[in-house]
Length: 441
Image (cartoon, rainbow, N blue to C red):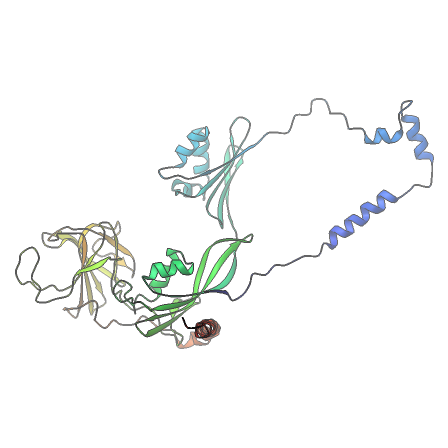
């Protein structure tokens, strides 16, 4: 079921200025000069047999030597996979020197060195196929425009502010989160953002059950009355196996993120699973029989099976103490989080570019990619969680909370959050009443 909280506003401006202009034109057309002398003078200028009015209506002669208006050609192109500006310029027949002039324009020119498939380019060309203007649009709200200025180009960034419409959706899960979200009208990117809000409380791979449901208050973005995408999720509620969790978006100069209605952060200091996995191939088990060596060897972590190359994230903020390789671990990373916590990531195919000993990392930052290096018989991440030097089960260990709303920010938080929670609850009640009144099958 889909409902709009606030319909889009259409503003109609009265055309008073246009009406006034029409009045002046009409008055000029109806004005009659009392004196007949100007008419006589005009008649004297007219050749025999030609009325004075015909002279007034006759087209003006062309001025000798006046150059014709320059002809411009405007061409639109979309960046295709494998394209770069050099390839596109060559395809358009534009000289390479023109590309160098655009890229040399500061400060925006260097941003064109990396363009992406699906983005739009607009070329305005002169008669000799010289480049007069180039527009690059990464999306509907942003354009980089480069216009010729002498022998070079001047760039400017043009941004547009979309109209934000508050909308609402509800879905009950009967197969999977993604299938149910698609039936409700969500795209996968918005569904992923919804899952990220509640990821510290719900395991969306292992814990989702038939009958779970969600309610979402979110923004739809419009430009010139055309839907162009989704804005923020403003508030949401997810019910999983009978337990309900609510979250509301809040931001100020020092804080932004999702919080419970009481101001507790939805985030924990650590992620439960630092990779988007397809299944758990081996659980935490201190009496496990190793699949390669066929003998009891403690398994002090969890193996998350995922396709080779899947990004692996830092579970929490911390400092890399090891980024190396051994025969057993393959490529592996160790991160220290304060004095009490350590996390380990084994069997990586490779490290992220910035990961090395001493590097500072943030929660959710990519540190490497899933592989099968070391003692591994299939691509997976082996993840360990240590508290004061003792291995704990990452799925069940008690995780510390992230910082809540501070007391001095609480009035501002309540001012922003309470109307959103009230709106979410109001829609939820409408949905529940509507389902209650449906006739029984």
